[in-house]
Image (cartoon, rainbow, N blue to C red; front, side, top):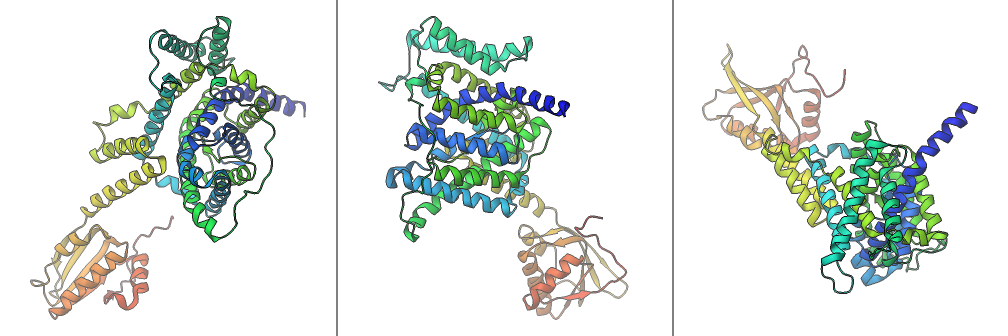
Length: 506
């Protein structure tokens, strides 16, 4: 019993500093994303607290940090502007319900279908977005222009100092997370020397009370559903894609495996709750997740503590958070950018297939220009089309004439929508004998287009008074043809002595 308590206390101690570090970075990000969405800062802070707490406790990826994100904020700008914040809360509740449904339907496994070039493009695109988001801190709030002169040099110096501490401190000691140490040192330096630079308090006041439970004040009718449903679907898709891809990234870094379906449900529950408590919704945050993992927060405790620390700061210690210089946080995020961007992918571009290089660059660019959901969708579609095109080139035949004068086409390769044209070009009905057999021993029929191709070929032979038979179909292919019924006119040569391999595992 004593050993168990000792282990638990050790784990809790190891999670305290990573949790605190993440909290210090969460606050300005949540405030900034609230401004993007057109809502009060507390709406973003409450969302980050509730989504972060619930997903850390019941989500499928220990160590991953969730909260209000820019990817979601940009989606709801028009909704808030046209219909008000209560419609936002209703949308977030519906978003959560959709995400729970996705988890129950076990749709989290579809993240496995995302090709590696798309994953690299996602990582690089998000790194660029995080970098660009920090540049606004170098603009003058009154004029909107870039800071120049001594102010700029001071800001750059503080950012460089922050980055230097994060880079070199782990070489000396790992007792304290480098990001936390950098924030504390730069904050002490700014206030100790009375340096003129902006702080978190210059963005907004983060003090507040506990979030209150409220049912969104909207008409609960079909008209409201028509308004919020499109936004809810987009938010759910963006949130799940960003969360599941961040989960996959952390899986690679930690060499462990998260549970995608459980994460879908956890995100959904979190968003339903935050919608009823005045939050703007959220999903996984790749930057903060990387800070947590790199600081040693690999379990659930660091995420839970980060959310609880955030609530404590909102309730009792907002003045301490407001003292943090923005330059310190910019330095932390710049180091996140450096650690997140897949630098080896630049060297890989000349070495990998051109199609993969194109997808990598395309997804990175679309992520920056539009949003993550669109970028991943485009990347998957392009990758699928490239794969289909390559597979379409792999269908071919060998022909022979048996002792009875029957011509046998021994087909190799997949028969599907992409290879139909090549399939037709393989046959010469006008020159063939009366009886023809297609041997599918090394081929498979995959879809409706393949069935139609066989049917069309059969009709060509019948029109010439010739007979076409099919041989060595796998059980799956035969079942596919049987299910097609009268749609396909074919003659199947039974061969009980032949055993074709199937998709079933031995």
